[in-house]
Length: 261
Image (cartoon, rainbow, N blue to C red; front, top):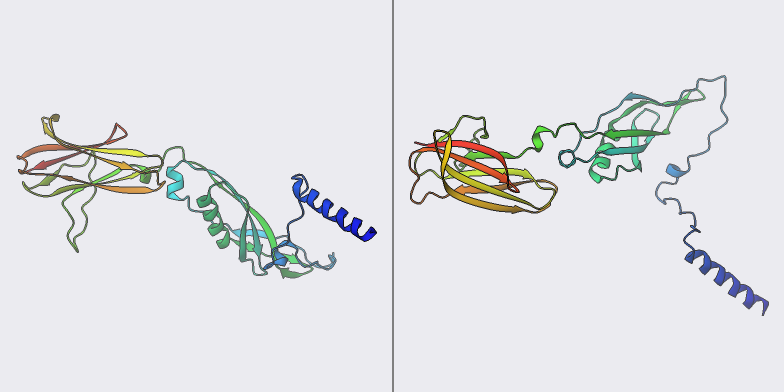
């Protein structure tokens, strides 16, 4: 009878701990690396022998991921690094996340390349663990590679080099009547985005008529996307000056001049 009551008490107590969110049992140590959590105890420090904490020899600056920079992401990542007796990092773990996976990944890559002067303990170089922060600061101005780009061209044949990209301040492109003219528009889309291409006839720098308009809807992918716009020439356009204007969500973002000779 006593044994039965004792078993019932233990069962109720166990269920109470599991259902109480304020009572959290300690997590088990990782089975593959017990020394990462619990280093081997060291012998007593001998004051008669050289001692030195690990110090930075060469810190690598992480590359700010382009997609993250263009999205305006920033933050700080703190790593815990396992440094061997030669000062090389053998393991890098994220202790405090920036809350952006791509920033944390860049920090880990830089941390793994960082070099240290190893710790000296009782006159011997030994492995140790070091905490190292990395800060990702959003630039004051978006980098140039974040901007919309327009490549106005004839289709590229196999083995043919691409022509330099056109732009608002570039010299007008010259095409022959009947040429297939295409525009490759590259744009970051962090929210659903609409691109509009407006092909216009120009006289004395002023648009006098719209030849063709096209739209593309971009999904929120968080990365650079390319869209192709092709000017239809049926019948071929007359010789003269033309303009391709690109709108992003209704806002004019790029004006590209070209002519047909």
